Length: 278
Image (cartoon, rainbow, N blue to C red; front, side):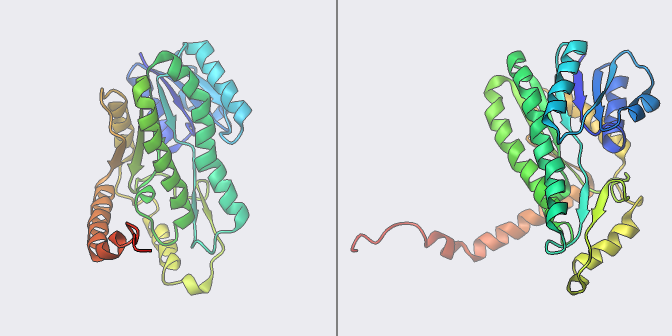
């Protein structure tokens, strides 16, 4: 039996992953800002511990981890799922909005990871799974600041994977495409005040987000099952894109980067070396 520690578990991906882990016979420490919703959804389950956790509060993160260890004795899988979106052009995003977004999506992830890793290091085993996004690999107009938080998660996870490998601990960043969740609703998405000059870029994205809401191609229940498969893999990947749209976007970016490298290769190489005659 594995013990999962899942942030943002009250709804969306977090709740579905919690349900799948319990169905698989594992124990789950499900965390949320308000854990009452977790009890209402899952009931009094013998392998479920619902814990209050605002990921931006370091003391709460440490307390939640201690509660997990007291109840189950170990943490095998950490799923950093808590986060939300910000829709707007880079210039449209105001300072406080940007700071709040990074506080949850990046600094909150780091806070929880720092609280869990000492225990995984003592075990010499564990798996850190960080929920990123297709936007963490390829940015979109209108999602620039949100994508920046997810680009940060990608870099953190890539470094973690190398740092933790000698200790028997894995790290994976999961990159979902567009899944039919409440992500584009008001409870999961902040929207910046629009600037008219961006109507043809971020403005188009705003309109598309309204049309796409609850019409996304990805099935969240299948993503949750994929997460269980990932956690039970002996040699997990550093990156796992999920969804046909994620695969297509990543492949298109690879082609674009390859073409750009070829076009600018000569200038890139020209900066090596020194003029010994000087």
